[in-house]
Every structure is written in C-alpha cells, then in structure tokens.
Length: 198
Image 1 (spheres, rainbow, N blue to C red):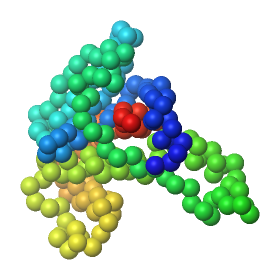
Image 2 (image 1 turned 90 degrees about the horizontal axis):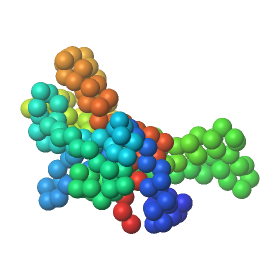
Image 3 (image 1 turned 45 degrees about the vertical axis):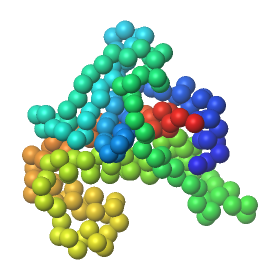
C-alpha cells in the first residue's frame, strides 16, 4: 500500500474524510458473505441512516436490507458496519508519467491527485464485486459459454456478461441499474479505506 495512504489509515486521519452518501462493500466471516452498507444523510445532523444490504438473499428483486439510525460519533464502532472491507485497489503512477527526465504535466498530476483515495481501479473492482453477487442471485446458468470463463480476465468477463444481459434480459438489466444506483454510492475517498482498521 502507498505510504501516504498507510499514514492516513494508521493515524486515523482517514476517518475525517467520511462523507454521506457513501457505500461500503464488506465480507463477513465465516463464509465470506457479501454485504453492502450504505450511509445516507439523516434529518437530525447527529445521525446518519445506515442500510445493511445482505447480498445473499433477495426480497422484491433487491437484496434483503435493514435500516438503522446510527449516531455519527458511533459510526466506526457500530455493529451495523461489522465485516471486513474489500481490498482497496490503488492506481500506481506508471514510470512513463513521471520520471527524473520528464516530470508529469499539470493535468496528469491533477488526475492522479483527485483519484488518489478513490481510484478508477477500485471503483471498477467494487462494480465487479457487486456484479458477481447480482449474477449469482439472478441467473441460474452461466451467461456465457464456458470457454469464455477459461480464457478471459475477470473484468472482460463482466463486460461480456453485461452485454448479454443488456441485449437479452431487459428487465434484469433495469434491475442491475437499480442495484448500481442504490448500492454503489461513491465519494472522493473510498469508504473501504475510511473503514479499514490498522
């Protein structure tokens, strides 16, 4: 992990970056069950609304969920957020972007700084993680021929599966768009970093 990110986590400073709305992707022991916790604004500014979505069961085409009012002062110790955050995928700066003979230009620097604590790699990883849970709950058979699963990278498989669902399963595609809108809320800092314990 990048030393700057590690410093923010070890000192607890990363917790100051919490903003609502956001969502946190968790895996719970012992079976690595998938859970998403969304945090939204509450009318009382001392609280936030925490919704815990169980990605192992469906209710009315959405994952089973339960809503809680959590004090902002207790959000990092609340049982509602119990579980292990999925691993943060940082985006390292490639050598061709920044080296001693040619430092990066301002636009490249701005891009890396603005995405430093919530990289595009991580956003893609969260989507792939949620997509696998969606497919598991909504489709009984593989969406692609088995040879595709043997030859492709995970991200490419997800793209191919999404094309199949978009073209051949319109209602399921609409449902996926609802999942994505409700469960993948993102801010300038990844919630998986904010809730990572040192």
